[in-house]
Image (cartoon, rainbow over all chains, first blue to last red; front, side, top):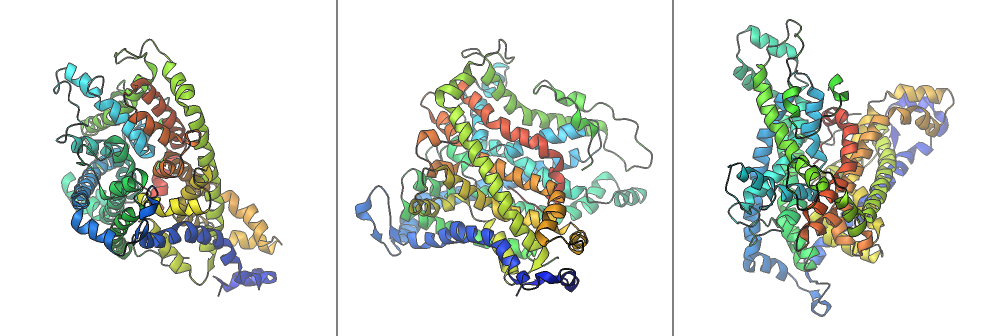
Length: 308
Length: 302
């Protein structure tokens, strides 16, 4: 039943007694409706589609498939297992590097210096850049004929004419670097916000007691940031797992499927080949993997408690 | 975040070493502050990182404004031919209008729905509230790519495929959980006594909301609206999947096809990138000072 949080408030507005019971439900109804129709229902329908042969371009083959999509995925599709392996590499490298650079950047822009506001705004700017725009920026840089790499090689740095996006040996590093450029500000912003909550007195007391800079960092800064680091790392891992835009446009999963993550594989099944049934089975597998992450996350954050 | 006066300083042209001047000796420090890092230990890594951030932007602008066929790294003479190509030739004028429509509609829808829901979450306790909060958090883990197939099916049933409304709906729904969490936090920070005072003075709950609460929610609405606009503007996969006629493409879809052209016209691609970047960079410049505060308020956005 809807009750106003404090009895005092009910007394202040006695006229509205009965209507109160419905007010919160009316207010929350649009959100709930939208989320049921456009989030919950579609998610549930994925499981149904994953049991079907379903391709929009081949309607004559459509029909109930049982577990066949799952069998294909697990036993007959090497790309599924390869994409899983690449997903782990991709997420691992991105999260570790972004955390490292983000932490360094947060520590630097937390110092006091002139033009600090402008410096912060500038280094945080890639945060608003979309995956597709990141692809545009780095395609121009990586161009073997007129890109920044060519400019460097004309100055004598690196070898001329390297097409980093076409070479299976370099494409991974090239994609990681582009995504790193876009992802570091997320960690830097979050960690900076947490750094600012550390009391200056702590550092002063530690200095008086003779603690050097490294010990102050290890014994004050790092323990304070621990929770923020755990949460941001988890969130980022999931976000990078789901990150399709950049790889779809920068490498297209190639060359030779060397950069196909599981969600990218799903997107290709959906957008390019209209294999909705098989794509739905891949989706279900991804959900299973993510569910584990979600449970860990919920455990750690203890979210949902009523703080009112 | 302390508001530096430097924020209002004129922006220097990118790529021309704005960093060295950004680290001029600071004013004499007041005594008894904590020991600082030596100046070079800030200046060197910061300069390097500023270069890493700015070179890609500079390189794109360079391509966009220098005549085709030239390769100088100082863009002179300037030309607008590439902008003419993408805006009129490739159709970015129409894509821009589509992205704007979707972005503004998603912004308005997100703010209105999240405002009413956020107020309910902050001011009432009701059955199912905890479940709802947990469910909202769960949605943070739903990947856009996973929703492509089921949402496409749903929009087909509703006859909404190849309509900009499908993008407005999808973007709004994906934006809702974060916006609800954010706005309910902002409402909680407004003392309930202010509302009560208005009720005692004879205001109805609704009038008190509009007269007392809404004006104080401005920062919250700016944050939620900006996030909604940026995410909608940047969204690629939904637009790629749901929209099929070229006159309804949004900017990211238009860009992706420009990348995929058989022989890439780098000048046009760069000019398209600039068109895609300008609106979000403006919004970012507007909200960046509140960003760190917003993050510490518990908002976590990818």
